[in-house]
Length: 245
Ligand code: ZN
Image (spheres, rainbow, N blue to C red):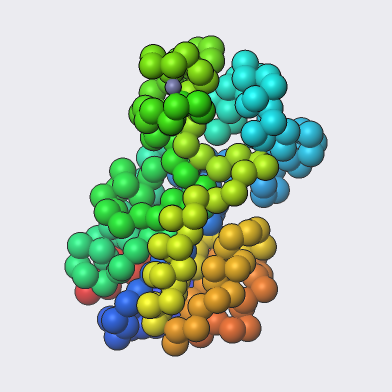
């Protein structure tokens, strides 16, 4: 790691030590470092296979062609062998030490919980839960590892993953919780997000606390507003942070 980044990590460490309410907001970059492709980013499936793929992740596809929906979803969204990286573990440890209030994430892979984080607000839902599209009965996510269209044992309707599809609104409860965390935060750390996609941009845009820190390889629209911008791997930065005590 270069010297400047090492200094930046020390500064981040100091900011965390001196803050009373720290919140982490993570984007797709958090998961790509665990081997999960960013389906919006460069090399992701939109760019490599064409924009038509958005349809396969939409509510319309789920309703009209559930077989196609589940085939595509299992192939492109489910990575059962992915493991948390150093960044996930570092965040879990900060929470245990009382230095991190919440993790807000747009990822659906559950890797924060796998690393031990407790307060995780999943803005786009989670692969670990599903529910009946008619009666609402809740199931786990195990059907994602099976074949065919899962059916509700109570009413026979399609059971669907509890994730936000195209054409659907975010979960209002989770979104309000996330807004509340950001409103209370004096330190907001954003990692692995270019902050271009809703709801990232609007949530971070409403941050009025003292310090904003951005850890991302590429520029973001909020770099100028940030106290500290670290152009490096979010897993590496957080992982090294954990060694500073
Ligand atoms: Zn049902």
